[in-house]
Length: 429
Ligand code: ACO
Image 1: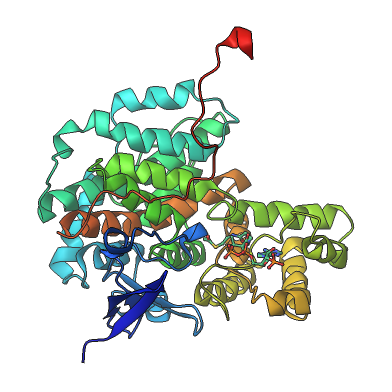
Image 2: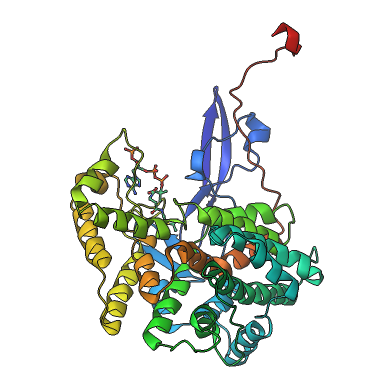
């Protein structure tokens, strides 16, 4: 039997259809509600509002479940590669070997940047935040590749744009790093796969090739996979919202980069390491910082804890913590910040304030320590998150674009300003 919900406003009852997802998630369909009742739904932060139906990623925040296209994240992180995961997210299924080879080759074909784009790097301040430059350069790809800007691209054309974007973003990011340290750019190599090529462009120099380490490649691979999609998060919703106006993929993703930059979202990985450094430099008094985070008069938050959706544990954080310890062990490295992070996590998990609010370590808590161990500078951490999230943004843009139910995103509001009043000329004010 078809499920219905009832809402009564001022004595008038409205019957609304209830939709059920493939994992039994429920939604009340309010598409006609405003037209019928004159009321809108108010939902700060969209904590209860669905903006689309999506077949890309399933997550259950209570049970700590995350699946890409139905496949558990644990299996993907263990067995797949970032490029294969990108194919899965964008195309809805795992590729055959031939399809994967073709997809991977297109990354090599698109890795180099247009000569004109190199001027962006010259003009950008050396100490400017790389996320600003990343957003600008991604958006500007639309100017350099106008042939990719068809209003209604076919699936095949979207694949070409996706490869262009996924491949170039890696080159752009590495060049940004080189620019920030005043070093020469190192061009991509056709014989290297996605992650080794990125590490090569980041850390090789004119005179010396980066010494590739399997443990580093594997840790970075896992991080990119774990960041690849997370359904309707802040940056992905931004990409969808921008794309809903029929803006092109480059413009939409450029907005996603800006949304991701914020410290409550992808910028948190940078802030976690800065927070750990601050605690360390202040003598390591963890409790002092926990108390500060608990003080209702203080806006301070412990970075890397809490999540809008996960209320038990973040499955990505569990894997990343494990990978972080593994990497340090394999490389024979030690970092006082890792010891501090472990102590901070243990203290937070014992604390009632965090337990009552269901605040657990999130994806950003240990990822920064891995980036730091690899030699990535702190400011670049959100950039690495952005590279990882690229397949998700592309998949959502594509899904939105090909869903006939998509409409321009345009939320409503409740107006709380002054009632109508007359304009007063300046001499009479
Ligand atoms: N430290 C201390 N207190 C916190 C934290 C934290 N990290 N996170 C939430 N709280 C408290 C809030 O103060 C609030 O307390 P109150 O009920 O007494 O007012 C309560 O927990 C609920 O917090 P909200 O802000 O309402 O939760 P929301 O779902 O809106 O925010 C968010 C989620 C943004 C992730 C939040 O937990 C946070 O700011 N965490 C720190 C930043 C961070 O790590 N962000 C990365 C998230 S993962 C990602 O986006 C990739």
